[in-house]
Image 1 (cartoon, rainbow, N blue to C red):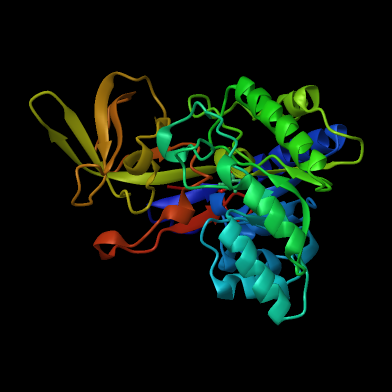
Image 2: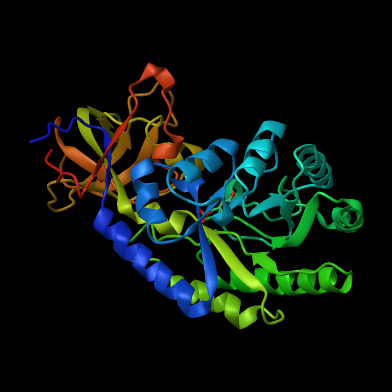
Length: 377
Ligand SMILES: *Cc1c(COP(=O)(O)O)cnc(C)c1O
Protein backbone atom coordinates (compact mmCIF):
# COMPACT_ATOMS: atom_id res chain seq x y z
CA UNK A 1 0.00 0.00 0.00
CA UNK A 2 1.24 3.45 -0.85
CA UNK A 3 2.46 5.47 2.01
CA UNK A 4 0.58 8.70 1.41
CA UNK A 5 2.43 11.53 2.98
CA UNK A 6 0.29 14.58 3.50
CA UNK A 7 -0.35 17.11 2.13
CA UNK A 8 -1.56 16.00 -1.30
CA UNK A 9 -4.18 16.67 -3.93
CA UNK A 10 -6.53 13.78 -4.54
CA UNK A 11 -8.46 13.67 -7.80
CA UNK A 12 -11.65 11.67 -8.14
CA UNK A 13 -11.47 10.59 -11.77
CA UNK A 14 -14.95 8.98 -11.68
CA UNK A 15 -16.42 12.34 -10.73
CA UNK A 16 -14.42 14.07 -13.47
CA UNK A 17 -15.65 11.55 -16.04
CA UNK A 18 -19.28 11.89 -15.03
CA UNK A 19 -19.03 15.68 -15.08
CA UNK A 20 -17.48 15.56 -18.54
CA UNK A 21 -20.27 13.27 -19.73
CA UNK A 22 -22.86 15.80 -18.53
CA UNK A 23 -20.95 18.62 -20.17
CA UNK A 24 -20.60 16.91 -23.54
CA UNK A 25 -24.24 15.86 -23.55
CA UNK A 26 -25.45 19.40 -22.82
CA UNK A 27 -23.06 20.97 -25.33
CA UNK A 28 -24.34 18.67 -28.08
CA UNK A 29 -27.95 19.37 -27.15
CA UNK A 30 -27.44 23.13 -27.54
CA UNK A 31 -24.90 22.99 -30.35
CA UNK A 32 -22.26 24.92 -28.42
CA UNK A 33 -18.59 23.89 -28.66
CA UNK A 34 -16.55 23.72 -25.47
CA UNK A 35 -12.91 24.55 -24.97
CA UNK A 36 -11.38 23.56 -21.66
CA UNK A 37 -9.52 26.45 -20.00
CA UNK A 38 -6.16 24.89 -19.08
CA UNK A 39 -5.44 27.64 -16.60
CA UNK A 40 -7.81 26.01 -14.08
CA UNK A 41 -5.77 22.80 -13.98
CA UNK A 42 -3.08 21.71 -16.44
CA UNK A 43 -2.12 18.51 -14.66
CA UNK A 44 -1.29 16.11 -17.52
CA UNK A 45 -3.37 13.20 -16.28
CA UNK A 46 -6.39 15.45 -15.88
CA UNK A 47 -5.78 16.95 -19.33
CA UNK A 48 -5.54 13.52 -20.94
CA UNK A 49 -8.93 12.61 -19.53
CA UNK A 50 -10.49 15.89 -20.66
CA UNK A 51 -8.97 15.62 -24.13
CA UNK A 52 -10.47 12.14 -24.54
CA UNK A 53 -13.94 13.74 -24.51
CA UNK A 54 -13.16 15.74 -27.64
CA UNK A 55 -13.13 19.19 -26.04
CA UNK A 56 -10.99 21.97 -27.47
CA UNK A 57 -8.43 23.89 -25.41
CA UNK A 58 -8.38 27.50 -24.22
CA UNK A 59 -4.87 28.73 -23.42
CA UNK A 60 -3.55 31.93 -21.88
CA UNK A 61 0.19 31.41 -22.42
CA UNK A 62 2.49 29.90 -24.99
CA UNK A 63 3.40 27.11 -22.60
CA UNK A 64 -0.28 26.27 -22.15
CA UNK A 65 -0.55 25.97 -25.94
CA UNK A 66 2.44 23.60 -25.87
CA UNK A 67 0.97 21.60 -23.00
CA UNK A 68 -2.35 21.30 -24.82
CA UNK A 69 -0.59 20.02 -27.94
CA UNK A 70 1.52 17.54 -25.97
CA UNK A 71 -1.64 16.19 -24.28
CA UNK A 72 -3.29 15.47 -27.62
CA UNK A 73 -5.33 18.60 -28.37
CA UNK A 74 -5.07 19.48 -32.03
CA UNK A 75 -4.03 22.95 -33.17
CA UNK A 76 -7.37 23.41 -34.90
CA UNK A 77 -9.12 23.08 -31.52
CA UNK A 78 -6.93 25.54 -29.60
CA UNK A 79 -7.69 29.19 -28.88
CA UNK A 80 -5.24 31.59 -27.28
CA UNK A 81 -6.18 34.63 -25.15
CA UNK A 82 -4.13 36.91 -22.89
CA UNK A 83 -3.44 40.63 -22.58
CA UNK A 84 0.32 40.20 -22.86
CA UNK A 85 1.20 37.65 -25.50
CA UNK A 86 4.94 37.85 -26.25
CA UNK A 87 6.32 37.70 -29.79
CA UNK A 88 7.76 34.27 -29.04
CA UNK A 89 4.39 32.98 -27.84
CA UNK A 90 2.63 34.35 -30.93
CA UNK A 91 5.18 32.76 -33.29
CA UNK A 92 4.91 29.41 -31.51
CA UNK A 93 1.12 29.52 -31.70
CA UNK A 94 1.33 30.35 -35.41
CA UNK A 95 3.61 27.34 -35.85
CA UNK A 96 1.00 25.15 -34.12
CA UNK A 97 -1.68 26.45 -36.53
CA UNK A 98 -4.06 27.20 -33.70
CA UNK A 99 -7.71 27.85 -34.48
CA UNK A 100 -7.85 31.43 -33.24
CA UNK A 101 -6.04 34.21 -31.40
CA UNK A 102 -8.27 36.15 -29.03
CA UNK A 103 -6.83 39.62 -29.52
CA UNK A 104 -7.00 42.09 -26.67
CA UNK A 105 -5.83 45.40 -28.20
CA UNK A 106 -5.30 47.23 -31.48
CA UNK A 107 -1.56 47.17 -30.92
CA UNK A 108 -1.61 43.40 -30.46
CA UNK A 109 -3.50 43.12 -33.75
CA UNK A 110 -0.69 44.99 -35.50
CA UNK A 111 1.96 42.80 -33.89
CA UNK A 112 0.20 39.56 -34.87
CA UNK A 113 -0.21 40.86 -38.42
CA UNK A 114 3.52 41.62 -38.66
CA UNK A 115 4.63 38.34 -37.11
CA UNK A 116 2.25 36.30 -39.27
CA UNK A 117 3.61 38.15 -42.30
CA UNK A 118 7.17 37.27 -41.30
CA UNK A 119 6.33 33.56 -41.47
CA UNK A 120 3.99 33.78 -44.46
CA UNK A 121 0.86 32.88 -42.56
CA UNK A 122 -2.57 34.33 -42.03
CA UNK A 123 -3.65 34.27 -38.39
CA UNK A 124 -7.32 33.74 -37.62
CA UNK A 125 -8.33 36.23 -34.97
CA UNK A 126 -11.32 37.14 -32.86
CA UNK A 127 -11.46 40.41 -30.99
CA UNK A 128 -11.86 40.02 -27.26
CA UNK A 129 -14.28 42.77 -26.37
CA UNK A 130 -14.69 44.25 -22.95
CA UNK A 131 -18.50 44.42 -22.76
CA UNK A 132 -18.68 46.27 -19.43
CA UNK A 133 -20.84 43.61 -17.75
CA UNK A 134 -20.71 43.20 -13.98
CA UNK A 135 -20.07 39.52 -13.22
CA UNK A 136 -21.43 39.67 -9.64
CA UNK A 137 -18.49 37.69 -8.39
CA UNK A 138 -15.47 38.70 -6.29
CA UNK A 139 -13.54 41.71 -7.60
CA UNK A 140 -10.27 39.83 -8.11
CA UNK A 141 -11.89 37.54 -10.68
CA UNK A 142 -14.05 40.12 -12.48
CA UNK A 143 -12.64 40.78 -15.94
CA UNK A 144 -15.35 42.32 -18.11
CA UNK A 145 -15.94 45.81 -16.73
CA UNK A 146 -14.44 48.95 -18.24
CA UNK A 147 -12.00 49.29 -15.34
CA UNK A 148 -10.36 45.94 -16.12
CA UNK A 149 -7.25 45.54 -18.25
CA UNK A 150 -8.86 42.85 -20.40
CA UNK A 151 -10.19 43.06 -23.91
CA UNK A 152 -10.60 45.79 -26.51
CA UNK A 153 -12.41 48.65 -24.80
CA UNK A 154 -15.43 50.25 -26.41
CA UNK A 155 -13.57 53.38 -27.55
CA UNK A 156 -11.01 51.33 -29.48
CA UNK A 157 -13.44 49.26 -31.50
CA UNK A 158 -13.58 51.62 -34.46
CA UNK A 159 -9.79 51.70 -34.70
CA UNK A 160 -9.71 47.91 -34.54
CA UNK A 161 -12.22 47.58 -37.37
CA UNK A 162 -10.43 50.02 -39.64
CA UNK A 163 -7.07 48.42 -38.79
CA UNK A 164 -8.41 44.98 -39.70
CA UNK A 165 -9.45 46.16 -43.14
CA UNK A 166 -5.88 47.09 -44.01
CA UNK A 167 -4.13 44.06 -42.55
CA UNK A 168 -3.39 41.16 -44.84
CA UNK A 169 -2.02 38.59 -42.44
CA UNK A 170 -4.89 38.48 -40.01
CA UNK A 171 -8.30 37.09 -40.83
CA UNK A 172 -11.15 38.33 -38.66
CA UNK A 173 -13.54 35.50 -37.78
CA UNK A 174 -15.48 36.80 -34.82
CA UNK A 175 -15.80 38.01 -31.26
CA UNK A 176 -14.70 36.80 -27.86
CA UNK A 177 -15.95 37.72 -24.39
CA UNK A 178 -14.92 36.56 -20.92
CA UNK A 179 -16.36 38.55 -18.07
CA UNK A 180 -15.17 36.73 -14.97
CA UNK A 181 -15.19 33.56 -12.97
CA UNK A 182 -17.31 31.79 -10.34
CA UNK A 183 -20.51 33.25 -11.75
CA UNK A 184 -23.57 31.57 -10.26
CA UNK A 185 -26.32 34.01 -11.24
CA UNK A 186 -27.54 33.03 -14.71
CA UNK A 187 -28.90 36.58 -15.22
CA UNK A 188 -25.29 37.67 -15.62
CA UNK A 189 -25.02 35.49 -18.73
CA UNK A 190 -28.36 36.82 -19.95
CA UNK A 191 -26.95 40.36 -19.63
CA UNK A 192 -23.81 39.28 -21.45
CA UNK A 193 -25.97 37.86 -24.25
CA UNK A 194 -27.60 41.26 -24.78
CA UNK A 195 -24.19 42.88 -25.18
CA UNK A 196 -23.14 40.11 -27.54
CA UNK A 197 -26.24 40.76 -29.68
CA UNK A 198 -25.37 44.45 -29.76
CA UNK A 199 -21.75 43.90 -30.82
CA UNK A 200 -22.68 41.18 -33.29
CA UNK A 201 -24.99 43.64 -35.05
CA UNK A 202 -22.43 46.43 -34.84
CA UNK A 203 -19.65 44.39 -36.45
CA UNK A 204 -21.94 42.87 -39.06
CA UNK A 205 -23.27 46.31 -40.00
CA UNK A 206 -19.72 47.59 -40.30
CA UNK A 207 -18.75 45.04 -42.89
CA UNK A 208 -17.13 42.45 -40.59
CA UNK A 209 -18.31 38.92 -41.17
CA UNK A 210 -18.85 37.28 -37.77
CA UNK A 211 -18.87 33.48 -38.03
CA UNK A 212 -17.53 32.68 -34.55
CA UNK A 213 -18.60 33.87 -31.14
CA UNK A 214 -16.83 32.71 -28.00
CA UNK A 215 -18.69 33.52 -24.79
CA UNK A 216 -15.78 32.79 -22.46
CA UNK A 217 -16.04 30.78 -19.27
CA UNK A 218 -17.00 31.63 -15.76
CA UNK A 219 -19.68 29.15 -14.74
CA UNK A 220 -19.34 28.74 -10.98
CA UNK A 221 -19.42 25.66 -8.77
CA UNK A 222 -21.17 25.22 -5.44
CA UNK A 223 -18.39 25.46 -2.87
CA UNK A 224 -20.90 25.02 -0.05
CA UNK A 225 -22.22 21.73 -1.37
CA UNK A 226 -19.43 19.76 -3.06
CA UNK A 227 -21.94 17.09 -4.15
CA UNK A 228 -24.01 19.43 -6.34
CA UNK A 229 -22.95 19.01 -9.98
CA UNK A 230 -22.69 22.12 -12.19
CA UNK A 231 -25.84 22.70 -14.23
CA UNK A 232 -24.37 22.87 -17.73
CA UNK A 233 -27.82 22.56 -19.28
CA UNK A 234 -29.07 25.74 -17.60
CA UNK A 235 -25.88 27.56 -18.56
CA UNK A 236 -26.12 26.74 -22.26
CA UNK A 237 -29.87 27.34 -22.27
CA UNK A 238 -29.53 30.91 -21.04
CA UNK A 239 -27.38 31.75 -24.07
CA UNK A 240 -29.70 30.00 -26.52
CA UNK A 241 -32.65 31.85 -24.95
CA UNK A 242 -31.06 35.30 -25.13
CA UNK A 243 -28.72 35.35 -28.11
CA UNK A 244 -30.13 36.68 -31.31
CA UNK A 245 -27.68 35.81 -34.10
CA UNK A 246 -27.94 34.66 -37.68
CA UNK A 247 -28.08 30.92 -38.44
CA UNK A 248 -24.68 29.40 -38.83
CA UNK A 249 -22.73 31.52 -36.35
CA UNK A 250 -20.63 29.03 -34.38
CA UNK A 251 -20.96 29.39 -30.63
CA UNK A 252 -18.15 28.40 -28.32
CA UNK A 253 -17.51 28.63 -24.58
CA UNK A 254 -14.34 28.02 -22.60
CA UNK A 255 -14.93 26.53 -19.18
CA UNK A 256 -12.35 25.79 -16.52
CA UNK A 257 -13.60 25.79 -12.95
CA UNK A 258 -16.89 24.00 -13.60
CA UNK A 259 -15.10 21.18 -15.44
CA UNK A 260 -12.52 20.30 -12.77
CA UNK A 261 -13.41 22.17 -9.57
CA UNK A 262 -15.25 19.43 -7.79
CA UNK A 263 -13.03 16.49 -8.71
CA UNK A 264 -10.15 17.58 -6.47
CA UNK A 265 -9.71 17.55 -2.68
CA UNK A 266 -6.70 18.50 -0.59
CA UNK A 267 -5.68 16.15 2.23
CA UNK A 268 -3.69 17.60 5.08
CA UNK A 269 -2.76 16.47 8.56
CA UNK A 270 -2.97 18.35 11.84
CA UNK A 271 0.52 19.04 13.18
CA UNK A 272 -0.35 21.02 16.28
CA UNK A 273 -3.32 22.34 18.23
CA UNK A 274 -3.01 25.79 19.76
CA UNK A 275 -5.41 27.66 22.04
CA UNK A 276 -5.56 31.46 21.98
CA UNK A 277 -7.72 33.70 24.14
CA UNK A 278 -10.75 33.58 21.86
CA UNK A 279 -9.85 30.89 19.38
CA UNK A 280 -8.46 27.48 18.83
CA UNK A 281 -6.11 26.86 15.91
CA UNK A 282 -5.49 23.62 14.11
CA UNK A 283 -2.09 24.01 12.44
CA UNK A 284 -2.02 21.70 9.44
CA UNK A 285 0.81 20.55 7.18
CA UNK A 286 -0.58 22.20 4.01
CA UNK A 287 0.18 25.87 3.55
CA UNK A 288 -0.98 28.74 1.38
CA UNK A 289 1.80 27.80 -1.02
CA UNK A 290 0.08 24.45 -1.63
CA UNK A 291 -3.35 25.96 -2.01
CA UNK A 292 -3.59 29.72 -2.43
CA UNK A 293 -7.23 30.52 -3.07
CA UNK A 294 -8.21 31.34 0.53
CA UNK A 295 -5.18 33.63 0.93
CA UNK A 296 -5.61 35.16 -2.53
CA UNK A 297 -9.37 35.64 -2.67
CA UNK A 298 -10.61 34.84 0.84
CA UNK A 299 -12.48 32.06 -0.91
CA UNK A 300 -14.68 29.64 1.01
CA UNK A 301 -13.92 25.92 0.87
CA UNK A 302 -15.77 23.29 2.83
CA UNK A 303 -13.49 21.51 5.28
CA UNK A 304 -14.20 18.06 6.73
CA UNK A 305 -12.50 15.76 9.18
CA UNK A 306 -11.47 12.65 7.26
CA UNK A 307 -12.88 10.21 9.79
CA UNK A 308 -16.11 12.18 10.15
CA UNK A 309 -18.00 12.58 13.43
CA UNK A 310 -20.29 15.17 14.94
CA UNK A 311 -19.21 18.82 14.76
CA UNK A 312 -18.78 19.99 18.33
CA UNK A 313 -15.91 22.47 18.10
CA UNK A 314 -14.84 25.61 16.26
CA UNK A 315 -11.38 25.96 14.80
CA UNK A 316 -9.31 28.20 12.60
CA UNK A 317 -7.52 25.93 10.14
CA UNK A 318 -4.12 27.46 9.44
CA UNK A 319 -0.94 26.44 7.64
CA UNK A 320 2.74 26.58 8.65
CA UNK A 321 3.76 29.50 6.40
CA UNK A 322 5.12 32.69 7.98
CA UNK A 323 2.17 34.85 6.85
CA UNK A 324 -1.06 35.57 8.69
CA UNK A 325 -3.01 35.12 5.46
CA UNK A 326 -2.00 31.47 5.59
CA UNK A 327 -5.47 30.58 6.84
CA UNK A 328 -7.78 28.10 5.11
CA UNK A 329 -10.87 28.81 7.19
CA UNK A 330 -11.94 30.69 10.29
CA UNK A 331 -14.32 29.45 12.98
CA UNK A 332 -15.17 26.28 11.10
CA UNK A 333 -17.38 23.77 12.93
CA UNK A 334 -15.71 20.38 13.11
CA UNK A 335 -15.50 17.26 15.26
CA UNK A 336 -12.73 17.49 17.84
CA UNK A 337 -9.29 17.58 16.23
CA UNK A 338 -6.00 16.28 17.57
CA UNK A 339 -2.45 16.07 16.33
CA UNK A 340 -2.29 13.47 13.53
CA UNK A 341 -5.91 13.82 12.38
CA UNK A 342 -6.49 14.32 8.68
CA UNK A 343 -8.73 17.09 7.38
CA UNK A 344 -9.96 17.40 3.82
CA UNK A 345 -10.33 20.74 2.02
CA UNK A 346 -13.02 20.22 -0.59
CA UNK A 347 -13.51 21.43 -4.16
CA UNK A 348 -9.91 22.37 -4.94
CA UNK A 349 -9.69 20.85 -8.44
CA UNK A 350 -9.69 24.28 -10.12
CA UNK A 351 -7.07 26.95 -9.39
CA UNK A 352 -5.56 24.68 -6.74
CA UNK A 353 -2.56 22.68 -7.87
CA UNK A 354 -1.80 25.20 -10.67
CA UNK A 355 -1.29 28.01 -8.17
CA UNK A 356 0.95 25.98 -5.86
CA UNK A 357 4.46 27.32 -5.37
CA UNK A 358 7.48 26.67 -3.18
CA UNK A 359 7.33 29.71 -0.90
CA UNK A 360 9.37 29.08 2.27
CA UNK A 361 11.27 26.55 0.13
CA UNK A 362 8.65 23.94 0.83
CA UNK A 363 8.34 20.72 -1.15
CA UNK A 364 6.29 20.55 -4.33
CA UNK A 365 2.90 19.14 -3.45
CA UNK A 366 2.02 15.88 -5.13
CA UNK A 367 -1.18 14.42 -6.49
CA UNK A 368 -2.94 11.05 -6.39
CA UNK A 369 -5.80 9.79 -8.52
CA UNK A 370 -8.73 7.61 -7.56
CA UNK A 371 -8.20 5.30 -10.54
CA UNK A 372 -4.65 4.65 -9.35
CA UNK A 373 -5.06 4.24 -5.63
CA UNK A 374 -7.61 4.67 -2.92
CA UNK A 375 -6.92 7.14 -0.17
CA UNK A 376 -5.43 5.50 2.86
CA UNK A 377 -4.25 8.04 5.37
C1 LIG B 1 -9.82 31.93 -16.84
C2 LIG B 1 -10.42 32.00 -18.17
C3 LIG B 1 -11.45 31.12 -18.53
C4 LIG B 1 -12.02 30.08 -17.61
O1 LIG B 1 -12.73 30.62 -16.55
P1 LIG B 1 -13.53 29.67 -15.53
O2 LIG B 1 -14.13 30.63 -14.60
O3 LIG B 1 -12.53 28.79 -14.88
O4 LIG B 1 -14.53 28.90 -16.33
C5 LIG B 1 -11.96 31.23 -19.80
N1 LIG B 1 -11.49 32.16 -20.68
C6 LIG B 1 -10.50 33.01 -20.37
C7 LIG B 1 -10.03 33.98 -21.36
C8 LIG B 1 -9.94 32.96 -19.10
O5 LIG B 1 -8.97 33.82 -18.79
